[in-house]
Amino acid sequence: MRRLLPSRCRRPSCAWLGLFPNGGASERQFEEELEEEPERFQIEKPRCQEMKNWSKIRKLTKRQSRVTFDTMDFIAEEGHFPPRAIQIMQKKPSWRTEDEIRAVCNILQVLDSYQNFEEPLQLLLAKVMRFERFGRRRVIIKKGQKGNSFYFIYLGTVAVTKDDDGSSAFLDPHPILLHKGGCFGEMGLLDASLRRATVVCMEETEFLVVDREDFFAYKLDLEVQKDAQCRFEFFRKMDLFASWSDKKLWQLVAVAKIEKFSYGQLISKDFIESSFIMFISKGSCEVLRLLDLAASPSYHKWVWQHLELIDDRPLMTTLREYSPMERYKEFQIKSYPLQDFSSLKLLHLQKAWELQGTSFSGKIRTSGDSLPKMLGPKIKSKPTQSIKCTMINTNLGELPKEAAVGAYVKVHTVEEGEILGLHQLFLPEGEHDTRPFILLSLGSEMIRIRKENFYELIDNDDEMINKLLKLNTAFPSDEDMCQKFLQENSWNVFRKDLLQLLVKHRQSPLFPPIRRKRKGIYDPRSVVLNLCSINKTTKPCYPIFKAPQKYLPPLRIVQGIKAPRYKIQELLPQYKSAGVLI
Image 1 (spheres, helix red, strand yellow):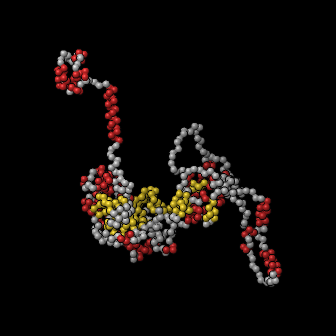
Image 2 (cartoon, rainbow, N blue to C red):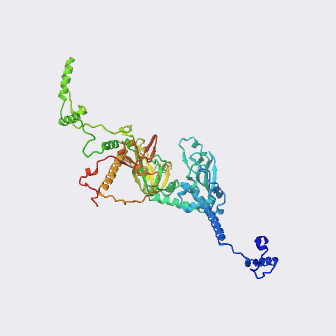
Image 3 (tube, one colour):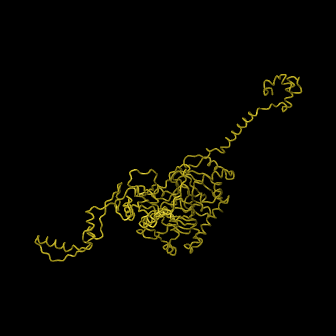
């Protein structure tokens, strides 16, 4: 206790002793009283010292509250399963805490097949899963054996084969592969049936495994059965499967899987070459086509018609004035549009053969079509183009390099209950449409079935084949889609010009507030082809978007085309001033 007292308190002076009732007490008596009743001799600290200590405590508390867990726990090598999650999965399911199950569930959200399950089933799966890693050529499931586990692929690739040891997967140039996010084996746990295929690892692969004992102990079978029942009810409502028995329909359910896609998510880059048949159970999708406009004759014609107005001349005027010689030739052609020169041609031939010593007595039939095209009545002299820019040669002629662009065109909207992948099933090979079509989700849920599994079920079913023949749908040609795109583009441009003409612009304040421009890669001008600036040497600096093509260089993508055009006041002379609708 002695060392806790200040030096002046150890040997109190007279002034110090005068503060206490035992003012003449010795030092020993003072220390004894201090030990018995320390609260009587507490010395008040300065307020500034108390505030300083309190600020230290607040800073310490704030620093500790910033980090609630160790962020290094769930860090792993790129693509691999995190070590901390592996430690959680090494525990028995009953020993895992709720926070650990939630953490594993969040990690597994990168797997598409895991996301397709409802949230209660996701939590149950995260509770019972265990981690496994196998090397190349390891057989995971063997054909003909009883299924004991349900697998999710977290990393790597596996192949599905029909042999017993999976060796054919390494000899087949195009094997059936499952990649990260896929799953297999769940239906084998429900019906206790024998495996119908072999699954072998093509490389080092990481799995998340659900064993049969845990599958039934924690009642995962009830949740999986609910999903299977939903698929069965969907197929039963379709007219296509009205004649099938329940047993055969359950065989279809066993090979079908539900997948969910959010709005704007890409489902397939080319569903024509896809190995799946897709049934839209909820929502809708769009079929898109990447259209190369430079390969369309109508686009070539449209571009050159608008480039003639590059100088923004008034309506009904040509690009430049004709010379006197050109005007005379034009007058000659217009003055004698139906002149027949066959008699002059016949006289010339007779004179030539007489000089050669040959006789001529036959008749020569001539018509206006046999004359040179320059003498035809419908030909007009055309002025030379004044376009100075880089040109490219296409199958249809020259085209400005900047005008060689592409566009995504909507071909069809697939609604709930429709089927994709069967529209060319029974067509001859020569009539197949091999063009790539893109499938984009608008918020949908679909059921996928492999084509070979579906073909096995409809084999020797004439009634089903007749129904499928009626489902054949043909998509429009690229030329028709290009004409539709140009019509919509012309209408959008005309509508914008008309609104600017008829509606007064809002007057901006004298001193508008300064707003900072948001930084981003998207610029509205980047998706618009501006043919008006095709002659300019300095080009605007903004990013452009390109789409890859098979066996071809990337193609610039646009959503609209801004082309030279007549002033709308010349097209609509009754509207001379802006704001007539106000």
